[in-house]
Image 1 (cartoon, rainbow, N blue to C red):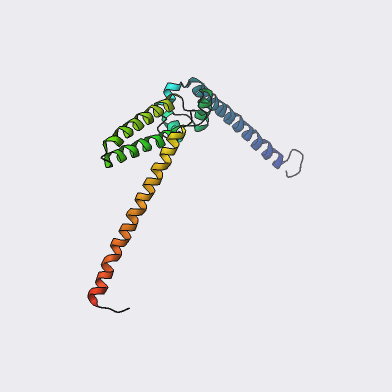
Image 2 (cartoon, helix red, strand yellow):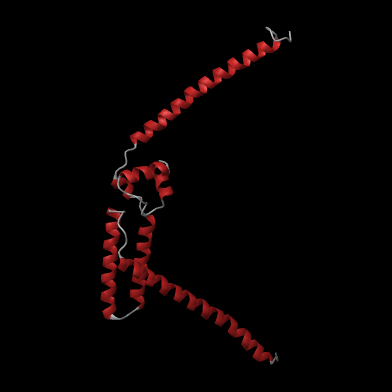
Length: 184
C-alpha cells in the first residue's frame, strides 16, 4: 500500500496533479480571454490630438483616469501624436504668470504701465494658445525672465509681510515690559 509501485501515495499524487492541471488549464483560458478583451478595448480606443488636448490642464495621471486608459498607454499615444512631454505644468505656470501680471496691474495705477501690462498679458495669452496647439514648444526667453521677476517680487512681498508680522507681534511685548517697569 505504501510502496512506490502502484501504492496509495502514487494514487494520491496522480489525482492531485490531474486536478491541478485541470485548474491551471481553465485558469489560463480565462486569463487569455481577459487579456484579449483588454487588448481589444485598448486598440478600439484611438485617441486624437483634440481629445487629448482637452485634458492638458490636469496632471497626466488624472487625465489617464478620465480617458479610462493607463498612464503608460497615454504617454505612448502622446508620443505618437507628437507630444513629447505632458504640458500640464507649463500651462499651469503660464496661467499663474498671467494671474500675477494682472494682479500687479491692479496694484499699479500708472497709465503708461497699464498699457505695457495689457500688452504683456496679450502676449502671454497668445503663448498659452500656442502651447495648447503645439505642446512641444518652449517658453520664450522674455516669458522666462518675466516669470523669474514675478517669483522674485512675490518672494520679496512674502518676506516683507512676514517681517512686518514678526515686528508687530514683538512690539506689544516690549510695551508690556515698559508698562511694568521691569529692568533687564
